[in-house]
Length: 451
Image (cartoon, rainbow, N blue to C red; front, top):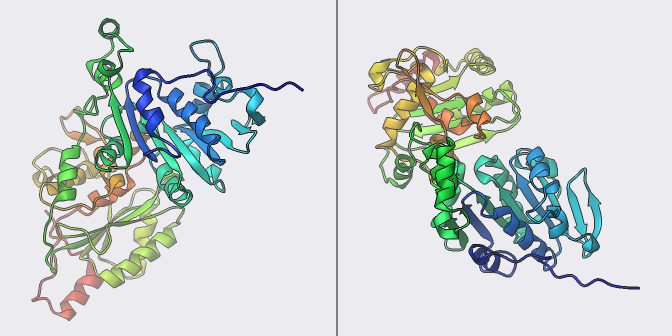
């Protein structure tokens, strides 16, 4: 019986600019978390795949390679061919080292019992039950950030690794990951532009410019700029980060407000955001998946009884109207429904907003200059996600959730709930209010001051 000797990685060696990642990341290496921001065509997936194959023979386990969407994973890698005309999966996982291959599941099991599988991060929960010890998030800037929240505790328990590889797409959740990596010593972090790798020459970039590629795209794709194409971003990251680092004192009798964004679709979450003056209390927010209107209403009622907010603003578009109706039926008339598409009031922000939702976000942006936010990466990414434009009447319009999803940005449910806490100015209780007066307000109407 003849045998074949193979070395992993198979017929592959890292290029000069890829060596630091390959040598420093993975099982038995200094880093178990990695954020790799490389320019387009720098070979991010190639290094990730081959270091995964290496680790599969060092530690038996399950390994995932996640693209933003399942179809993209199949097209780019499973059916992909490299520059030498080889199927990518055959180069990385030679057939002689496989025990099982499933094209339908995009899964390969090696002879030592390790399993590698591709999937879409938009459908990460379909892999429930598996316990990966290594996960690659390819094109992380276009992926669903909730996938990391789901997978993170599994990797912590398994002492596994996670690698985020991407080219920037403005200051979205991937920018937050990059910032996290800069502030954490045990992360591998690297940003490589074409000037660092030399793979793409300046004359090639000039040719792309002549062919019509915008300067924003050039900065983004070749120079890894997070600022590219973000001039129309309503809330800059610097403003959010300053709010997260600010130390403010909230007085007991500052306004207490709850904002509620009620989920409309399957992948959206219902969010309750709590704000006390210039801070958040008793918790920043709650997120609930799959809850019906009765469950959301019951949770709001419970918090209203316990925390006694001055106002509760609920997005009453779609199913949210049912939540407001139920709470009024229960006697919670400090709850007020907010129509995102209603007319705005320019006097509040100094800018002409096209609708109520835009007005609330502009008010929230102003508040960020003096208030404090929790140090929460998801919230930061959502606040920095929406873009804006001006309509025919020269009024500012915030980007719709539907349009954000079309460009790969998840719905800003938390940020919308936060913005809802600024729906109207709220008059807080003070020490001169007696208990009878409080009860009258609580059972009568939302304690707002109007405009």
